[in-house]
Length: 201
Image (cartoon, rainbow, N blue to C red; front, side):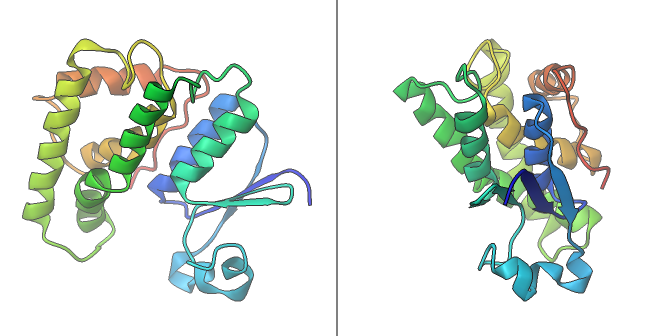
């Protein structure tokens, strides 16, 4: 096997994170979009790559990496020779891990689910999920009040991991007027090199 292949859904926020980072790194890859309505992610060919039947999955030569956070770490360590996106400092890596965990916790149960309920008809309590989204936005806005990016002056994979679903929640109706630091953070990311916009839905 050779080259990089990314398996995803067209509306996957987690898949967007990887497409965004691949673009930033200037890496060529083949994108294979699966149809969730046809349950293509549950078919034998894909389950052989990821037994959990979840996207995204990155195949790089003989390596198969599942989970968006794991893929971001892999790409940063393998293809960012300057360690810009995943600094070697132990404290900074701990901070990055905190935000990667948030992407699978607070973000998953807040902005991600809010967008899912409103836009793609996922089941759930919209009011409760909205409250969780606002709580997370309040935390994030406060965190960004004295820094340009999550770790400070320069972006890292933490910013890539946390950008997509809050942005999709805004596209789904969350008002940013009370979260100017998040709005500014969005603008900085979107003006960055080789930015890839999040799905419209």
